[in-house]
Amino acid sequence: MVIEMKPDDFIVSKTDTKGRITYTNKIFMKMAEYSEAELLGKPHNIIRHEDMPRAVFKLLWERIEKKEEIFAFVINKTKNGNSYWVYANVTASLDVKGNIIGYYSVRRYPNPKALELIKPLYAKMLEAEKKGGMEAGTKVLMDVLKEKGVSYDEFVISIQK
Image 1 (cartoon, rainbow, N blue to C red):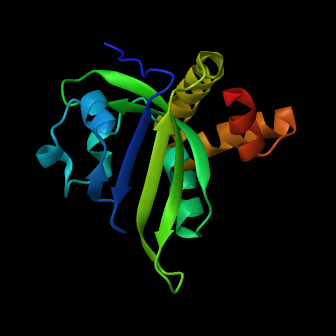
Image 2: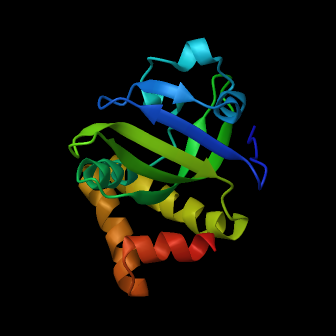
């Protein structure tokens, strides 16, 4: 079953540098169908859905490890096997010296029209990843961006509007 976020919901979580959850808000717990105790200290990928291309997470980690923010459409899996789509913004949390001390993510309601584009793109990326690994999935994404003549950021932000 697909659970839908409300348009005014914001899911918030923080992780340490290893991706272990250090904070979740109540909406995250409700959407993910986990208690706070079940989430804190666990790897954030506890909610990773099998329909999510690995290439998107590779791009995400490359960006946030360079202290660059990223926006992405993500499908998550709940404790009870349900799923939900989000429009995620992920950034590095820095200490006063500029060192990464963790990561911060805010997820909001994804534009349904954007998901009409993202779902078939992710399916195509997953199929490519099954045959040729993460590089093949990345190539599918880069080919789409090249065809549209936009960067990843331009594409993702424009379809969320």
